[in-house]
Amino acid sequence: MLNAGHFNIFLLASFLVLTGCKTQSQQIDIGLNISLISKHNSIAYTEPYIAVNPIDSKNLVVGTIKIKDSGWESVVFCSNDAGKSWTERNLPIPDSVSRSGDPYLAYSDKGALYCTMLGSTQKGMGQLVFKSNDNGVSWSQSAWVSTKSKWMFDHSTVVIDNNQESPFYGNIYAASHVNYRDENSALLYAAFVSVSNDGGGHFFLEGIHGSTLQNMNNGDAVITSDGTIYFFYFLFMDNNGNWLDKHLLYVITSTDGGGTFSKPMLVSDEFTAYYPNSTIDRSSKFKDQIYVSWTYTKN
View 1: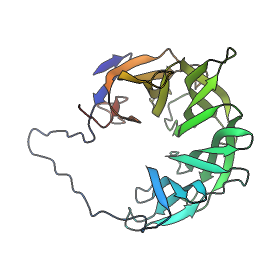
View 2: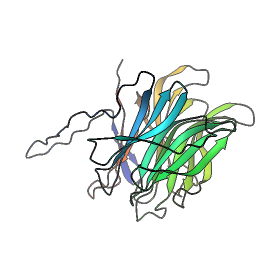
View 3: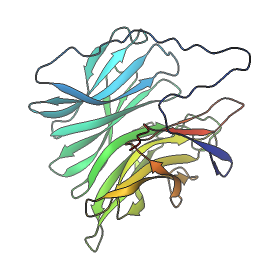
View 4: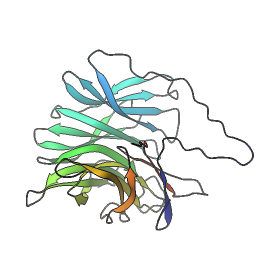
């Protein structure tokens, strides 16, 4: 457990966390596996991410990369019956986008659903943002976050400040990591974060944070009740393509709505996987405790 200011980060190097009860054991009921996708000989789906509507938990939406012979694209699957049945929905990806991927989903506390993804055009790479007001049935393109001709983006994510007591309530943060070259042509890696305060119509404060010479990849982000953002990323390879002896998990924080971020703080030097998952406790007893988990592997 790490103490980070006014809250604690718990490091959970496992997929399932069990909490005990002094008087009786707790039972977890697991339902039947449901197939979202029938078998396709020439189509594959990868890197799924699921979001649950905070107003109606029967509304589930999954974003995934659809790989076809003609290329990659991002699609979503929607369920209105708690996952018993699913329908594939296409996103209105512009014709100028030759390839899209890494879809990521987040609901606002009012039920608006946002999807960010990476897109490649002749001008370069960037993040697209889409919005749905009917649980993923129909979508409208909200914004382009950034298009840089010589930047390489990866692992798009989005997080929304749904804390009504936060001074940044309603802000939408689109994030990823980026590879770029500085004025001396040195290859650098950094976290990329941009902000919208108008429901996703426009994004600003596009900034790079935590620049390093070592290859990095990002996890997701969480926001505490006071509006502080915690963005996780990890280092795994040096600039020459050599794997690091230890993968290092870091967090950077912002207390001004994404305007600036802190220096990186080491969370763990025993990170063993890709894409850490973080979540935040909203209960009164453990309010604002942050939990970080990943798949643990041991040589």
